Image (tube, rainbow, N blue to C red):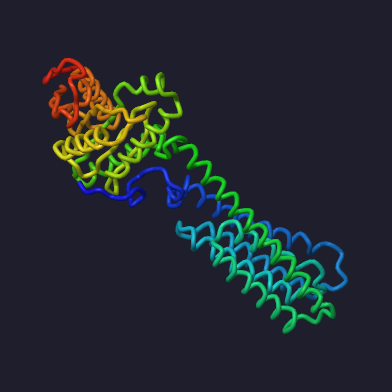
Length: 380
């Protein structure tokens, strides 16, 4: 099992841990789709509702009716598009901008018609990337210019071009910045909810979710998976005699030691006060025991709290027919850990064939307590 640098692919809490983990992609896609449908339907309804109103020039009514029909068609298309964020967003924005440009070109007088551009561009600012928003703004400026200077006869078109262009662009940019800020805050809150504040590792909540994913992945790929749990021996004495600040430093140092031994794809978390757990993907029992021994030996030879020698006990269990689920696998590892502590600490306990045994005595372990090479617990 190779040593890797922290953050090289192992699943621990990091600033980018949630970048590729949207809270609910299907919910976001559903929202986008029906906002697009509502935008087109409301646009169509609004245009049709203006036709009966007093109008000194009714020559544009036929064209407005056609555009209203095209907007209704857009709602149907968005509702029927294949699921996929990019297709829904790109069609809704581009089609919307072009229809508003057509509306600007045919309405007499133009009056407030160009401000319909806000609908597709605010949609773009909220749902699309910055690059896509920039492309949409270019399309907006070009189509607005063509609608005003090629087809419109309004004497105020230069004023409309600058006033509408700047106003809509500024609104779009502000909405985009606010949307990005909200996304950033949500990611920070998600990281905080999943992160142990002291060590920066995943907490128990995030660990349980990732543990479940890892078990499902192992079953699909038919690869082995093991979990190793660690408990710092006599850690309470560190807090009692040296203070909680020194205890916090010990926990952070031990977290760094664990993190330094992880491979890409492993999962590390602080699951309790001085308890840590590691999910080792693609690793069988013997390799997991070797990993636990290496951690224990590394801790025993590293400087401890104010020079004191620190130790850890470990429990190891492997995904199997007896432990087919995350809960049963974690319980098995915990029982193996308890067996290691009962056998004198600084040992690696193993859950195997429905019982626990002591697989290894960690280098540097002292007498520390009675040794019991075989401890069997039959009731998992």
